[in-house]
Image 1 (cartoon, rainbow, N blue to C red):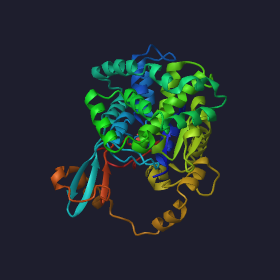
Image 2 (cartoon, helix red, strand yellow):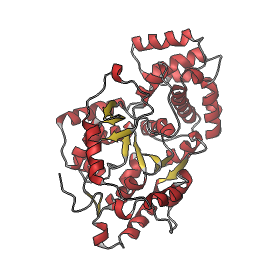
Image 3 (cartoon, one colour):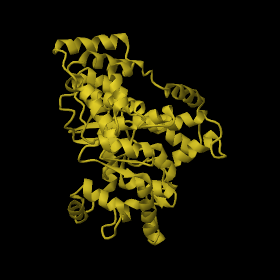
Image 4 (tube, helix red, strand yellow):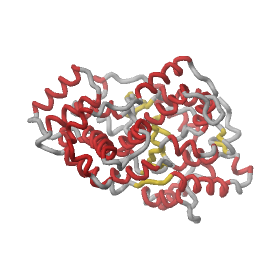
Length: 410
């Protein structure tokens, strides 16, 4: 599997089905909840480009990264866990939703079930829409409303309007989040934005007071990161560095909440192009969506030259990794973020072939194993022997077989 990639709805919409298949094949897609919410919200819109909302959502679902796409937990849930003491790793790995731990033979394993969002996209590929999803669409569209900026503006003060560049806006937001003098205001603002219950507020404040009321960036680093983006966005709008539709921009900026959980961010949105690089780590990069789309199109043309007899064996047979001998952006991305892939792949290709039937049997045993109770988990959950992710995968996607053509449909 390739580098972990965060993407936005605009990028996926720009792809053909064939291009989306190669995106899914060569990159591990971080499917952040905002992508699902934006897509679901389309069900409550009027006709789009001459198509019904159901047709538009179906087209997006056809391009959904079903093979290597993994769902990221909602940022509000991650913030809640961070507030209550959980350490949040912001190191480019997807922050997966809840899982269950099992034992299969002597192996300690973790199983990630299909999420409701993943199931929904698979249904939408079949043009199957539940009534509850139309009702949920109304809820999600109402949830994507403008924030009440009154409390944010009190913390920022008049300095927000004086910023001349995006960099200055980012620096001011960062200084506010780490300010000792404003730590009480920042703490209250963070809890207010997360919209926790009164009981949640009480638990968080009790823990904060117990350890000496540290600044937010030391108390809950991921919460501080999310709040910094919120403050940056408000400062940039106050200083007219970000203009245009306020609600649309607010939705777009929320994708940045998930930057800590990827290696690269690909988007065709100009706001992302301007803002995302300010929040990326040194080992991350921003990829302009049109550049990657062109490369995926070139990849598709390259592989279409392969004889049908080879293509029918499935993409893993003839394309387990990007082309090594050609100048493709995907190849350069692998070289940059998975620098050892060339030598490791060569070693793997020389290995003795494995028994696929035995692997399938072992995977099914792990997936069907009963869930361990907390008392039965006598091992470190971060050091399991195997992980299983449940997916629904189409046999054929566009021009390509994701699994061999002669593979039995069941």
